[in-house]
Image (cartoon, rainbow, N blue to C red; front, side, top):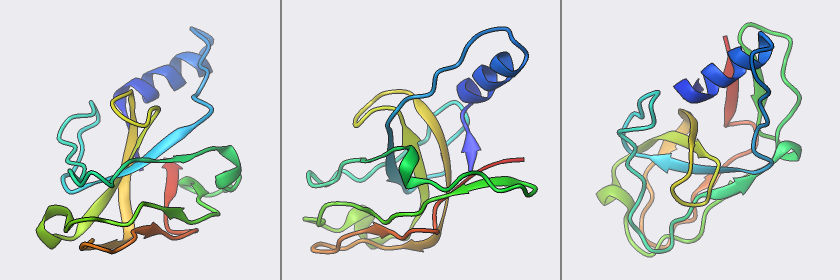
Length: 137
């Protein structure tokens, strides 16, 4: 998972006692066809009217591992609404994005989805427990 420049800066300032950092209590998971940048650009979310980011909070994630890299792994499925049209004309969706808001908001980071797949009309995209990982090197 690549955290945004803003999150990395805030974490460093917090660790060094320069400023306090209070993370959002709720995060919103979405998907992107394109590889996001650390500044939060180049994100292409589905345009299907049924698509919306899904909320997640601390209880949906395991405690960080004591490994390199340290990982926090999802412990619950993240389900999206049933698609009413093909997302990206059936192209494989490889990226997961995280924001602090259901729409718009601040970009937190992105990662590769371990089970990248296509989503067609009537499909329900499920990001299975254990398949979304947040990590720090």
